[in-house]
Every structure is written in C-alpha cells, then in structure tokens.
Image (tube, rainbow, N blue to C red; front, side, top):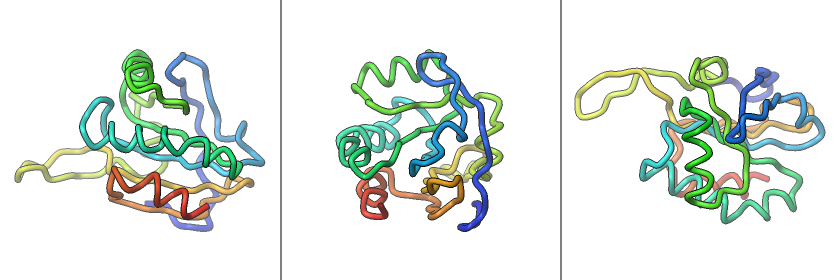
Length: 150
C-alpha cells in the first residue's frame, strides 16, 4: 500500500463509457479512489451500491468517487446500468494503475494462492497527495467509513 503523504500516481484510463480520465483532471477536489476485485460479485456489488447511495453526500463535501478494477469497459457499463451507479468506474485490464497503487498482491482463497486486487481505498487531497489509505477494507462498510473521513 502507498504511504500517506506521498503524491498519488497519475493515471489515464477509460471509464464505463469509454471516455478517458486522468488524476490531473480532479485537481482541486478530493478523490475517493477505490480498488475492487470484480464487477457483479457480492462484496463488490455491496460496496458499489453503498457508494452510490451515499454519492450525493460525497459530492456535497466536494469529493469524487472513482472505482477501479481489471474489468472491461463493457463490463463496467453493464455494472453501472444494472445498479444505477452514479460515479466513474475505470477499466484497468493492463494493471497499470492497479500496480502503481500497490493493490495487485498475492491472495489466498481456500488455501489456493493467486494474484489479485486487494480491496483498497485511498483518499487523495485537492493537490494529488494521498491523505488516507485503507487496505483490506470491508466492502459493505467502506463507503460509510470514507464519508466519515471527509
């Protein structure tokens, strides 16, 4: 996990509509950047839906919510439409952003080791510096936790 107080790595990734986004375009706003393993899985769906429910409160506080996973643009679009998600989902199949934020790690599931995205959330300040970092977050509780951090 990246250290609090360090500059957040830049990125240039497509969202669920195929539009490119960079960290630089969010300068002047706080960014809740959360990394999750996979669209339409139980934990990831709860996390996304709870961020969606609380989204108006995030925007009231001047913060943007951005989700990142390895899923394709098309998968993100279906996920967004199925659950009415009001925020940006970035597609990172090449793992450029995922690795830059140090969330691609060895995981153990039922005794089997594999590489995957460790559910992690960063709060990035208006100047692009990591203000808070939370690893191995609880999917369902994470949106409420992040709102509290703002």
